[in-house]
Image (cartoon, rainbow, N blue to C red):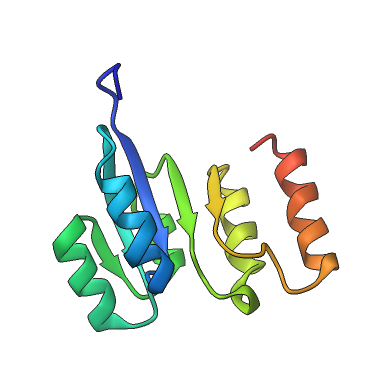
Length: 120
């Protein structure tokens, strides 16, 4: 970033698209600093944390509680959306949601309404 400010990013879900596209692209942007990485596969999160930085977690809630984050990338399978986004909204964290935001319209509308209500 031109102003020298770091953007502290947390990643939730480190599978194919996250590790193959988002992480390599974000790592090339000046000022992006990975401070937390989370995946349910412990070996994967440890390996990716060593490569890109950030503390490894297998429970995203622990990462959200312990790390000082400016934003989160949520790159989980469609069925896993909903609770993660709501937990980020509670913390007023801007988020990038990869894949469909939900597998049903009700969950997607609830997330949208909470984002708007909280001005995230």
